[in-house]
Image (cartoon, rainbow, N blue to C red; front, side, top):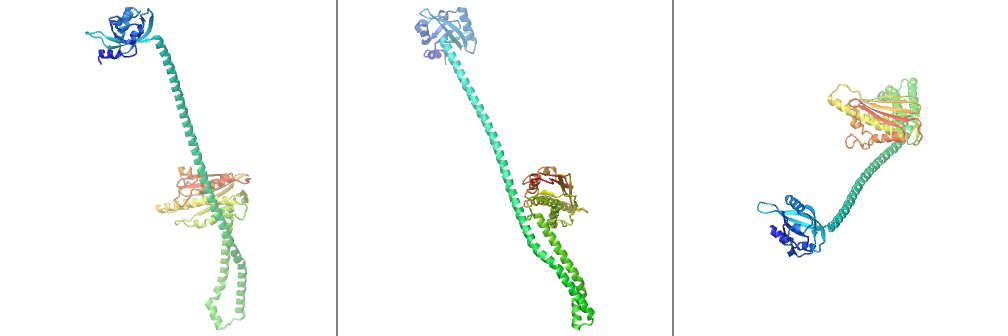
Length: 452
């Protein structure tokens, strides 16, 4: 756009605009300037800017020079002489639209604004700015409040999620423990039932063995008396004596009755161990001999204590003089069962490793040591010389559902339930120490007289 085109465009603008040279010649104005001065626009043609203002020519030229040499809009103040001899103070904004050259002087566009209006506009602008600043502040505060609310909500959601997860874990553990307890209760009832059913006929057999043995002894004595009284028996009797080998029969009959007596006594011991392990014939809390519970557990696990991969397990008992302990005997026996069964598993694993390595000797052992700490506490220590446990596994040993066994062989509840029985049920302590590839030791500490 050329300066002439710009001037034509500026004439129709409502704002007071003047186009002047850098020397102060008034080139053109628009109608808004004429209205401001109370003149017709034709009356302004050919005038100098100095003719319209009260400021000195020096001040005006200095201002125009500043406008000519600046690329930005230059602010100033001009006092106009109106046609009615009044003065009008205006704020001016000057900008060069054609720089000075050797061929022509600079062209400067001046925009005028009444100071009162400018001040009002400035106040209004400041007010708007303040309102905008307040609105920005409010939005910023709202954003901060929203961000904080989101943070609080996230924290609450995280806490709630954690609480729900903990509750879910507790419910799962409780469910598993209830299932485990129901299994143990069912097992105990079955064991007690089997023991009862076996015990009656065994007692009948054992009671009649004495009489049968006495009757057989009397018959043998009668036969011997016949032989002494009638040394010359008939040929048929002599042949029968040789067929049945009477002398051997008399000697072996005594051994048979002795073996039958030992067998029935063994069955009675097994039945007693089963009844002692289940403890269903006793109150839930009872003062018992801890050693009976350990021995009953070993009796039940005896089939697993036989030779494993050609290496028999040796049980070493170091029982102290323990007083009777007030406890839940059935649950305590369950703890012994879990720990000793785990020890047997560890020994079996060691036996497999040693057999693969073709080592000459291996003596798998389980040591059970009991002792009195003081008048209030007793300890039961169960140690095996199996594969051992590393630190990473040991730190999770009593966690629910944690197991290192193959799928289907372990549920991960044995030691967790044992921990609950000892710590929560008996107000005792249970700990584990282990050296990998050497040994594992469980120490159980329980009070002698716990009030339940």
